[in-house]
Image 1 (cartoon, helix red, strand yellow):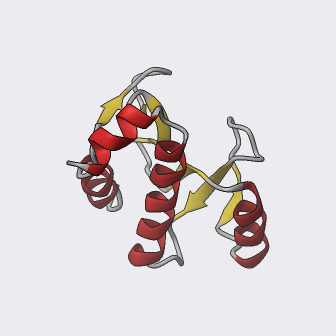
Image 2: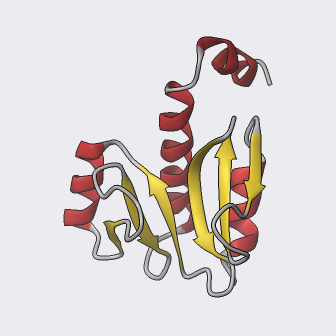
Amino acid sequence: MEHFDWVQQICESKALVTAEFPFNETTIVWKVAGKMFCLGDIESFQSIALKCDPEKALELRSEYPQIKGAFHMSKVHWNDITFEGLSKPFVESLINHSYEIVVQKLPKETREIILHQ
């Protein structure tokens, strides 16, 4: 659980982000404007699933053994990131990438709201 607080702080500091439990009472999902960008099991919180550009996802998986295709998500667009052995700034950059990918797909009006917050 040592990672939960700082991941929560990163996610919830972003514009239009909510935290929900749509699957069960232990899987927290952070969404931007209703679209998922980060999720993890709050009981152990040893890893998180993050959305990722498909090419970058493959590069990351080949370079870092802690990064794999997400178990319950589309492995093309989602990675499971195990915290052990990865720096906080690196994981934060992956969270930011996930958020940005989702924001890019939002309607223009929503993106403009985010841009001005």
